[in-house]
Amino acid sequence: MGCGASKWRDPGVRRRSLSSVGDVVVFLPGLRVPRNIDFSRTLGDHLDRSVVERLTALRARVVVMATQESATALKPRRRVATRHGGSSTANLLQALEEYLPALIGLAKEGSELRNKVQFVWANQEDVAEETSMADPWYEVLSVLHLMAMVCFVQANTLLLPRSYADGHGPRVSEESRQATVDLFLKAAGYLDCAIHHVLTHIPPERRRELPVDLAEGNLKALGLQGLSQGVDLQLGLAIDNPKATLAVKRRLACEMIKCWKQVKDSIPELPLSDGWGEKHALFVKWKYVEAKAAAYYFHGLILDEGETEKAQEMAIASLQASEEFLNESKRASEAFHTAPPASRSPAPFGTTKYLLDMISKDVQSKVQSYQDLYTQQRASNIGVSKIITTPPPLPDFPLALSPEDYELPELDPLWKGANQR
Image 1 (cartoon, helix red, strand yellow):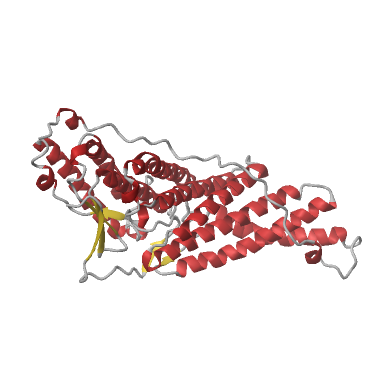
Image 2 (cartoon, rainbow, N blue to C red):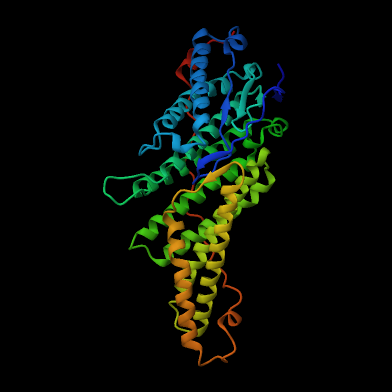
């Protein structure tokens, strides 16, 4: 059994081609699922039976639950949503958390056994191809990645509008949005741990053989995506809070731009097959442009509070830029949802709904006010569009949101008394 990574494709299995992935608020490029392996065959002669049996039972549970979840993860309307994001995903996350301590024991304590087990995983978009590696740290990396993606699935479920008994129609509650911010931070924490505390255990030559899902750049991009969507939700909550100032809203919008820009710069380097990479890139472009619309909108409102003609001109330029970016984001959203596999956009809420409701109306109002104020000072044949050309620069803010701290768990107690033969 080799030490490096290997890929196998069954020529008789057709590559999965999904026509639709349901309602999408949080995009993820599929779930990686583990395949069954036989620990007793590879470790039976080297470890106590109790350790082998526990590893087998824990991983078999993960295989069953992850396989079931992958069949419905991209069809969120099929699942029963709860206030915690769905019981099946919560159970899978718990199973992965319980598997890790036993697995880490094999990685840390069983160094001479490191190359004995070939761990096999497949991405749900590509059921015909499996990637395997004889290294328990590859398995740890795969588990952490799956834990993060399960959080993304839970987040998507929580952000789908639900009906309540108050007669106000389906909506995404404040409680759901706050819970989803926590899920995004948790996912970012798993991915941050994977980058800084797991990848370092995999030799560079093996790291180059990792599937694209587990490449360092992709792990970083997904972690930043979680933070970006977390900031987006914070902005939506601030918009709904009458005590939140324009300065707070502008800062959150500017932080979103910075975060999505970093994700955008990473995505083109990590293409996925069968159009999934393109769809992911379209999602990032959509959210990046929408963040620009939000930032220029709130920047324009703040500048509009100035009393000078120059301040008014800059305010109009910012607001006009926000309208242009909003229109571009609409086109990007449509391109994302129509790109295969097709997806549906649920009713807008939070930041998106606010921008759609307010930007065009406010731009028209402010431009008209500007024209009324300064018509006498301008030649009658010079319009505002000729006076105002380039929007003023946005302020730069450091990202306040950070991944939730996550450390690899302690060894399973079984390893403390385990004998290696």
